Amino acid sequence: MTAQPRILFFGYSEVGYACLSLLLERGDNVVALITHEDNPAEKIWFKTPAVAAREKGIPVFTPESVNTPEWREQIAALRPDLILSVYYRHMIGTKILALPPLGAWNLHGSLLPKYRGRAPINWAVLHGEPRIGMTLHRMVKSADAGAVVDQDGADIGPRDTAEQAFRKVLPCAPRVLARQIDALLAGTAKETPQDEAQANYFGGRKPEDGRILWTQTSTQIFNLIRAVTDPYPGAFTDGGGARLMVWWAETDTPAVHAVIGQPGAAGEILSVSPLVVATGSGALELTKTEWQGGAAPELKVGQRLA
Image (cartoon, rainbow, N blue to C red; front, side, top):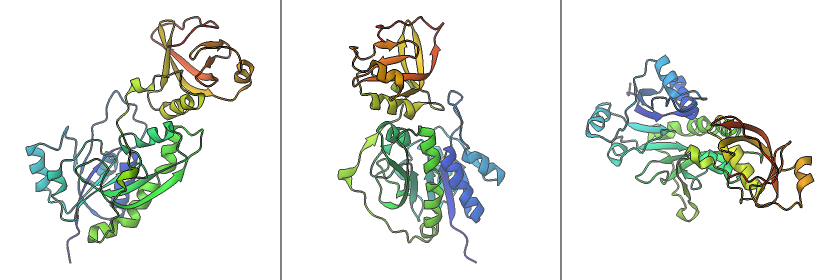
């Protein structure tokens, strides 16, 4: 009987959990999981692949970097026939990618070549995209630039938060993997080069990137809010010496209509109760907010939020 190909799985997030669980349910030969320690500063609202691995007795490793001589040696000792990466957050060096004879493959959370890089779902929501997806592609030196094997997508609504969008697109990843894993293990997967003319790249997002720029349109600000609202760090503005977290807002309410046409510079408070703020194209009603950094200041009509 021919030995099953040895799969080395790099992964994190609930996408990693779902895909590793699929392989383990199939009885594939997963020799180890390389993943991340949970960040205590991050809200862990998702399942992680370490749970699935430990339930099946799969070795779990959490190196800060695999691109050291020591870790390259350890990975080579695992003798992987195939590497699969699913939401692993660090770049994997080309020396490691060259190890498995059946190649190294990644499942990325966008419809490549669009939204290469980090946090693709958040960026897609921020830009008002109507459709997102998951793409299985060959791993190469440049992030998310390798040839595509398969992809699947899901429609998202103009009011979906990033988490809601994530939940809609999550099933696409194991669906793509289920379609293609046998071809990957047989070395027969068909690949299509990406169209570089259509590619774009976005970096990781930091909490500071949630700052509201009131000169933007109401729709742009609304998309930012839904892209970073809970469980992500949130959108915010400053006023009265404290920080106002904006967890939700509305572009079309009676309070917004009541102030349309009033003179107001971007960021100016047009109404206190309910809280309505002028934008670059009209106004937003801030419907779910939270003050941080001290007692809630007294707001006044005409006051500017930074």
